[in-house]
Image (cartoon, rainbow, N blue to C red; front, side, top):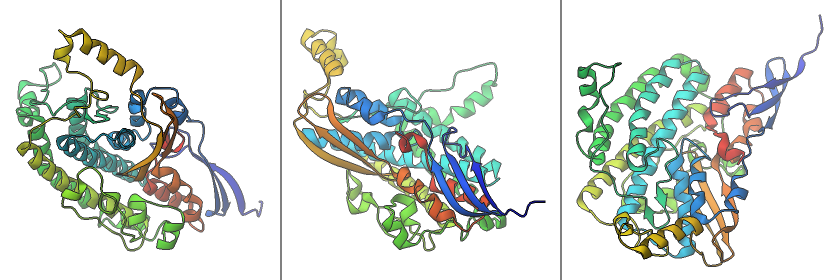
Length: 417
């Protein structure tokens, strides 16, 4: 038998959001990791370069496809960058709608993360629990945009349209009885706001269910406590943001520290960790879902009391109403030119960032005075966090690497963009 104890092995493809593009080359001494070489594969779709070949408004849908579980948050940063260069301010109602959907997107992201993280560690039931709650929020996406994932709902100057007054209902089919259909449609008899309000009333009890399954579970704590510790100094050095930064006890949240939209008018708390381990990051994301529910409730109250426009009245940015296009040739031509040629943005550069569910998501945009970006640079949160994988894994076991990678919360669409 050989006495060799040093091995070089391939680990991966790994993680549900990686689509086979993350390959880790591990240097092992027995089963202890001494080094990790991260290969991010060939998912690259040249999003930044594609955006430079298209009018500004044609690239909103590309943002959805970066981190495809945080769709509207990606859109928000991009349209904010365009608005800053144009000098356009969206109506207050549109800003409240954006914040409400940003927080719904945060819940969507954290539910996907929690289900995948639990499954990576061997708890399959949690994945099913999380997806049950995600379905309602995907229906909200569909109600406003017609798409369950890639919404393209945010537009420079506001949002595509106001919140609908009715929710789609389940239709009778051969797989469900009339009684089952009736139960499914119970909370769909009112407006979209009624549906969302019903969701946020029941959602905290669902979070309690996830915590009952995991938070004090002995096996869960053995797999996550004191694993993948990020010290505050290391978090700063590596440029962490979001739950990865706050898990180390550093109080930095763009919604509080650099407020955008209407976050400065809303009341919510920013959860902080103490150890910076995988367990802290889990607890922070759980609490963030509770705080998002709190923010959504405040947005619903404001939106009910304040009807109004959801798009700027700047005709260079806002398309004409469809009803006007039926009778007015000028409006039809305006619509056609806006959606084919886009709009001219004055020369300049800007950086717009949002508190994305994974951290700071930023758009650096340069205009040369044409209808296309001269340069678009995306600052995703996940890429910064993934670079720390080797640092966090050294001296731990192979099984711990799965926990650490999953706790980072990576989606490769915005890492290899």
